[in-house]
Amino acid sequence: MNKITNCLINKNISCKPIWFMRQAGRYLPEFREIRSKNLDFIKLCLNSNLSSIITLQPIQRFDLDAAIIFSDILMVPYGLGQEVKFEKNKGPILSELIISNFINTTEKEFTKKLNPIYQAITKTKLKLHNNKSLISFIGAPWTLIVYILGIKEEKNILNFEIMKNKKEEIKLLIDKLVNFLCLHIKSQIDSGADTVQIFDSWAGLLPEDLRNEYCYEPNRKLVIFCKNNKIPVICFPKGLDKAYLEFVNTVKPDGINIDYDLDPEWASSNLNNICIQGGMDPKILLLHENKILKEAEKYLTIFKGSPYIFNLGHGLLPATDPQKVDRLVKFVREFDK
Image 1: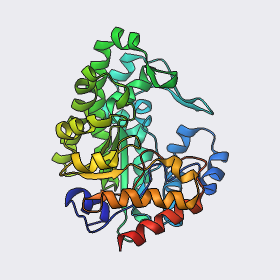
Image 2: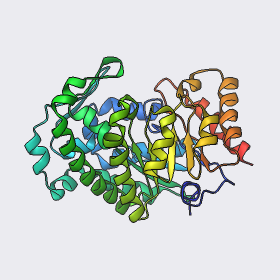
Image 3: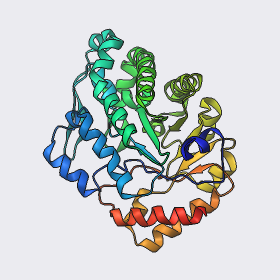
Image 4: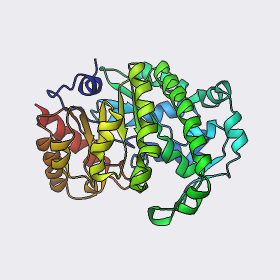
C-alpha cells in the first residue's frame, strides 16, 4: 500500500506523504518547453504521450509520494460536447451551452472523446516506481457549472441573475454531471490511477442556503460512488471557511484538502476522524527559504498527531522556483524522521 492510500484509508499518522497540486506545470522549465510547442491546451491534454511525460516531470525532479495526471477539470464539459478554449491572461472560455448536445451525449461518446486521458494514465502507471501513488481528479458539479454557464463574474462574484433564471437547468446539469463524473472516475481508476481528488474550487462563492443542494449533495453522491468502488477520495471545497466542518460531516470523504484561508489550528481541532491535506499558501513559496520552511514547520507541527498529507491550499504558482520546491520536499522528509 502506498503512503497516500495508507494515510487516507488507514489514517496512518506515522508518515507524512507529500505532493503538490499543479506540481506538473508552468513553474518547471521542462514543462514550458513542451507548452511552447503545443499552444492548444485541450489538444495537449489529449496527447497521451506528452501528458504522461508532463505528469512524470516533477517525479523525476523531486522525492514526491504521488504523481497527479496532467489534465484539466474542463475536459468533462469538453467530453459532453461543449467547446473549451484557453486564452492567455483570460483563462478558460467555453462556448455557449447547447443543452441538447450535453444531455444527449452517450457514455460511449464521452469515453471515446476522453480516452487519451485514460491512455496517459496507463502509460504513466507503467513508469511510476517505488510504490508512488497516481492521483486522478475531477471538478465537482457546481464548479463545472460555474464555467459551463459562465456564472462567475470578475473578482469572484456570482451572477445571481443567471442562477435564478437557470435554476431548473442547473438541477438538470448537476444530475447529468454526477453520472458522467462517476464514469470518468471509474475510467481513470480502471486505467491505473489509485486515488481521486474532487475539486470544488468555487464552493466558497455559494450563499449558505444553496450549499447543500449545489455543493454538499453532489459531492456526497460522488464520494458514495468512490466508497462503493473502494476508491480513496479527497475533496477540496475551497473557500468554505468553517463550513468545512459541515461539508466533512455531510460528505464524509476519506481526505479533505484545506485552503490557505482556513486556520490550521481550527482544522486540527474540528475536522476529526479524517485525513487532512494541504493548507499552506502557495504564495509563501515565492518568499525567502527561511520563511517557507518556518511556515511548513507550522503545518507539520499542528498536524503531527493526525493523518496528514503535506500539500498546499491551492496549486503551485508559475513564478515558483523549482529549487525552493526541492528544498521544501527535503525539509518535509527530514521532519518526518
